Length: 85
Figure (tube, rainbow, N blue to C red):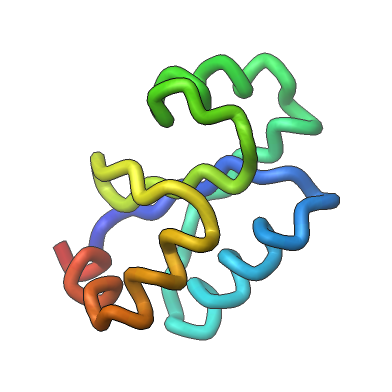
């Protein structure tokens, strides 16, 4: 199983939706709250190639993007394979 990391804020509905999907699939993930840890936002932007919105989702070394991209992978039947590595 690949490691999954999410950069989030507690007030972001898309962040909650992404976490809900991963939790439903039984996937554990590491979460960085950039509101509580604002110094980590620049790290997120570096890793996400300048994207500054949340969530920013990483599966292994791959930058997935945000919630819409995560759900698109699920609809396309590609998310399970990415998670498995």
